[in-house]
Length: 232
Image (cartoon, rainbow, N blue to C red):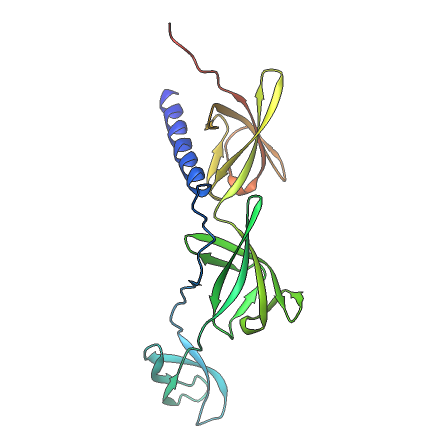
């Protein structure tokens, strides 16, 4: 039991460290000219000079800017091509995190699709696109060159609500955690100025009274304050 308690406290010290880092004075969103890292393509859509078909040609060898040899999957013709990636464009980006939103920007290839629900990297953070504005209206997807603004939310951290019983009153708290981090019934959670033990967890489907639950599945945790013992 003592070993399990020590493990729980250690894990929550780490969680508290991550939370304080996330809420520190350094703003994670004010990073202008963030560039997305795009993997080199394995195929290029080209018009085959032999058969006339405009189809994905598998890249056999080459480099980016791409100058190399490709093979048409339709007729098998091998040819040498030179094609250049278009210059990336900057799109205004509004990112929501906790109770505030920050403006920054993100670079896309002009022909790249920007889609609601898509997950992107922003510096050291992970975000999900929640809305796209193109041609004066909200759309589910659009090519980057048509997009005026992108809205997104940060998804590499979630806010877990925690109701803690303190005698004759219940006090609300919030704990920051990674989405896949798990909370366990009986776990001791650090709350800054105090600690609380989790006695049950509510998800959208059920109430959990034993076992573990991922942070992104939790609607609310319930617990009671842990009284610190003092020696005389």
